[in-house]
Structures are given as C-alpha cells and as structure tokens.
Image (cartoon, rainbow, N blue to C red; front, side, top):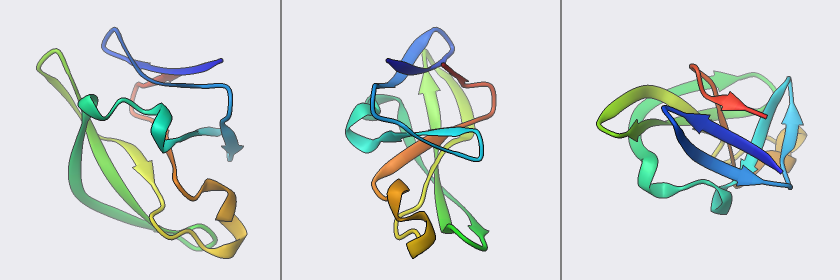
Length: 93
C-alpha cells in the first residue's frame, strides 16, 4: 500500500498507483477530498499535456499547489487519466 502524507495526515492511499518520472499517480478516488483546495495554477508538459493543481489544507496549514493531475492527458500519458500526484514536501511511500 502506497501512502501520500503531509503535515501528519494521510492524503492518499492505494495499492494501485502508476509511477511516471518517479512520481506515484494515485487513483482520484484514493485521495481524500477534504484536504484538497482547487488552485488556478496550471502547467504544460510536452508529452503529458496540461496539468491542473490543488493545494493541500491540513490542520489549518496550506501547502500551495502540492497536488497535480492531468484532466485530459495526451495519448502517451493515457494511463494517468483520473489520477493525482504530489510534491512540495508530501511524503510518498
């Protein structure tokens, strides 16, 4: 079972992650929505497509843009459709 943890809370947990470029992409239904706050931040990857972000909020603390996902990934990255990954101090393992 792979977990994503930040600020003492388990943000996501699944035994079905997809690893790309060293990042575990969790199924969206394995991520606790109560910790997510929509962000207007976006970025672009030439082979995966356009990413959208969420900030994490745990116990009143915010980790800006610490979660990302590809709403409509390019065909080369189709396996991460409906999945979310983490960074910015989120412990995944």
